[in-house]
Length: 638
Image 1 (cartoon, helix red, strand yellow):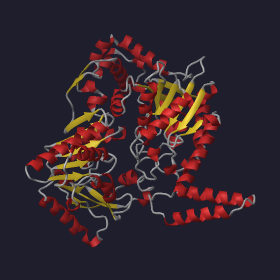
Image 2 (cartoon, rainbow, N blue to C red):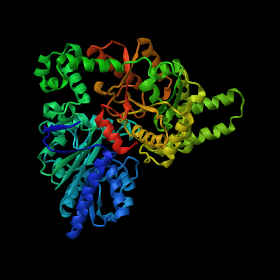
Image 3 (cartoon, rainbow, N blue to C red):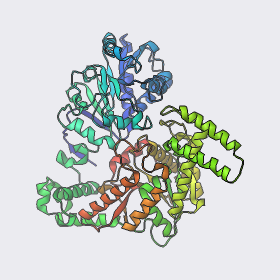
Image 4 (spheres, one colour):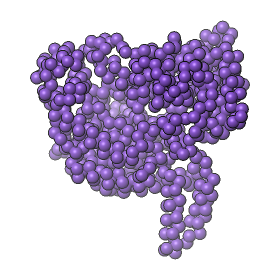
């Protein structure tokens, strides 16, 4: 998309095709500062953040240290925050996170590492916070501060309402922040109610600030922080007042910025077909009209007269976009006549039915050779009470049939002893991890059979990157790619469906797609007829109408059948372990609402009316330039 724009952004913004590229840019800026300060004989003082957003910054710094000799011996660090109260050895502690993910891999001196204490006594908190401010001042102030941004717009733990002058202090966490952290603590009830955080004033005193935000779920708050006036409700907006602040985004997080979402409002555009479709659908929604009812006056009123000239007039342009959208609708997702090999890669053991359950059933009913490959075990998403319930069943089963229960009782006792003393987030024993994986596997088999698949077409890949027993996973490795490649060779697909939903709370979907694309690169290298790759969403996000390339319509009966398929995953019913912080509904409710919303969107555009629609877009994405460039940069294909 070639666009000449001005922007509505009130702070410097850099947009990168991929989060990995943004992280590398931040890391290399830090490395530049470290070297320049060392040349002056001075320490480099860094303000550090934790979590999924900055982790690739630390990985790049580790790489620069190991391979390029980046010396961090004279670096001084101050972390933004820490939960209170929390032990430094707790799995959710920022002390442990920083040491595991950064400090132990580089040569920063222990005495140069500063993190707020989660164990300081209540009477000593004010003094501790004052000492933290003094230590920053004694170090010469922070040279470079890394930030993420929360869903409420907070930086550090500076919740909405934090003043611009606030300093390091204890703060009560609001409900949104605790919900955001719930998956790390295996339940909101386990999240501490308080934290110690640098203040907004402390952050703004840094000589340079980098705020990073990645993923489509961050797009709305990024727009508020960047384009709207400074507000106490969005503490990240205070960065607009900083002389050397910069916001680093991947294209998904930038999607709501005016220059991306509606670029015609800030500059002249080159009206390719994708941008025409985006603009016409936007106009139809603004004018509350079907596409074919849009007039030249509508285009002029909403600032799209230039598009009208490029598109050849309202009649021709409306008809072109309408026909394109009509052609996305199909009840034959794999085509008619030819029996095709279809493989659905499902990151977790329920993503297939949640995101494309009706299409899966339709593919099986239409006689295609359909396989489902569950990429990870999903063991982390099973509650401990389900383990207890199944252990009780197995023990009672053996007693009922006099199968000799001594060995079962020993195992049950061992499991119960561990669970009785287990702390939130503590890594399960291998026995318990195995039971949880088995629970997910049996549910997936039950659901896949319900959808019409035979047992030999149900595959469990158990990719090793997932099997850490922790929320944080390993990077994708050769063994993961090899496992996907073996599946491709075994099934010889003509058509592949995979998850393109990048907003799952801990990145498993993204990593699964990474492994698939890397395996496809090897698989396709000597093939003339390469398989089609279609991406689905639905658990957290849905494809925007302008990006949909296949719409699989659903009747009310098909909606109901899909719901029952999702219900087969009983351990995920009523309450999921990792629902994500942005949507408290059950997954079946999210799926139905998104399917209904997509159908309603088609209806409002003047297209046929259905009860629901499952949406797909094809890789490489023709109209989703944001996602395509992001994923292409992270995981290049041919």
